[in-house]
Amino acid sequence: MRKTILVTGATSGFGRALVRRFVAGGWQAVATGRRADRLASLVEELGTDNVHPCVFDMRDDHAMAEAIDALPAPFRDVDLLVNNAGLGLGTAPAQESVLSDWRQMIDTNVTALVSITHRLLPTLIERAGAIVNLSSTAATYPYRGGNVYGGSKAFVTQFSLGLRSDLAGTGVRVTSIEPGMAETEFTLIRTGGDQAASDALYAGAEPMTADDIAGTIWWVATLPPHLNINRIEMMPVRQSFAGFTVSRD
Image 1 (cartoon, helix red, strand yellow):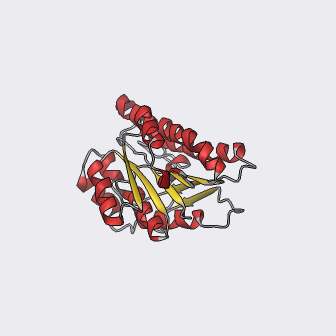
Image 2: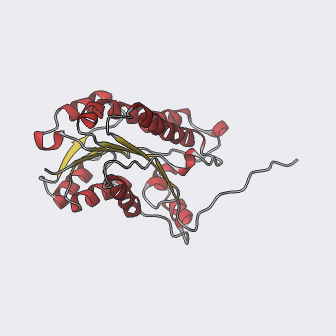
Image 3: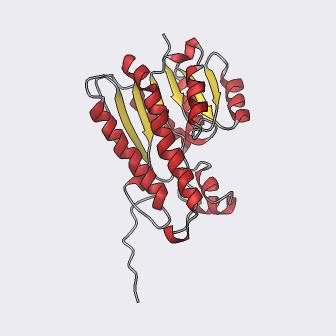
């Protein structure tokens, strides 16, 4: 019997690459996202037998619940939940940030993530499945302008460890994936559509790709069921740790 992955935020970047990687490996996928046209193109590319689209905003708890409850029988038994949906908004320091951006990051990166996880836990426990949460190196290493984004990802990392503790004995595996620089639409969204800023950030840095992350998660998911990878922190070779900031008179 084929296994089923549910990927949040499957309309671009890591999420889209994940759907493609797992379908190529013989799985079927539930792909969620806000942009119906992008999900439709994914279904057209990979086939209705392989991908079931769920169009909703992760912040809309009612829409999320309705979509999960309405999953067709072939896609209902989720073996792997990948909490990929998330975003960063703004690069300003805290004192210059927009409060609505902070709230949107918390609503998406934290509240929505725990809501869909809570809803799928009974199925995942029943099937001795797995949860992979997309955190970030920003959860560990602060930087100017990271404020709420980094805080939200620190929550994801700690929540993953908490889930591991609570789910001990159920057979459910939990992993936190914590990427550094990866070239997707992330920076474009964070800067309000500034393509030049996005291009400048990644120029000459040989950043990771969405396929790199998808391949790593495929490896985690296909390990023998008695093995759990707690955390993976990933960076491109050209990225390393910043020095301490010193403010001088």
